[in-house]
Image (cartoon, rainbow, N blue to C red; front, side):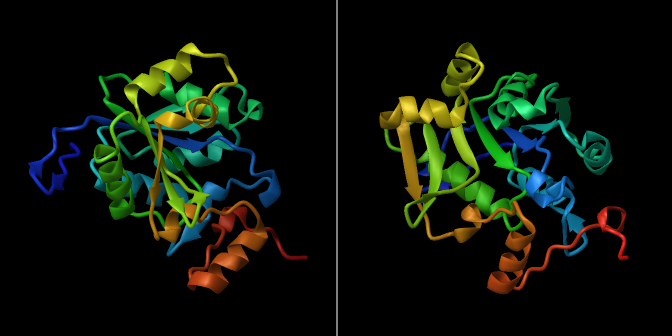
Amino acid sequence: MGCILKGGGGLYSRLVMGSVLLAAGSASRMGNRPKCLLELGGVPLIRRQLIALSGAGVDELVVVLGHHADLIEPVVRDFPVTVVHNPDPDAGQVSSLRVGLQAFTGKIDAVLVALADQPLINAQDINDVIGAYKKRPEGSEVVQPSVEGQRGNPVVFSQNVREQILAGDADVGCRQWQKAHPESVHQWETANTRYRIDVDTPEDIDALAERTGHRLTWPAALTPAKA
């Protein structure tokens, strides 16, 4: 499926979009349980992200695993994705991003980097940020959602940025590239708060339920036994 989006003057040229979905962290603040397996409406968050990305027509999808890979991989195995493993996930998110960026097998024009712990992102949200990338100001190579001045996710950047990241030092990822090239970054202003919502702690789960009415729950296998 391709990303052919309508604009004011007709159709934009077809954009071949690759996506890296990051799910390699240890989730230490969540009691070392993989937060991407939290469920909303009975569906694990990582599957919700894969459904959203597939629904948005992403052409090639890479999932990066590390910690808890034995628990997460069976949940994503039935999707048409490339699963890769970060051999050193404790090296941080930049290392996982670089593993993912290296894993694309086909030609791509741009990369969308998504996080597996954003519970409310849907296919329309993905389409909207891709659309913002296609309409970005001339000279911009990165598009990041900005909600009331706060940066959100997912982020989209060009194949050129991907190549520069991979050619750079091991500690260079998207955020470091943006810091070094602020003139090439377009902060896309949007009122969509879903781009800012993720869950890192049990308190985040409670706050999400209080704010939105959406209650995340652990699958039975990851629910601590009561004393």
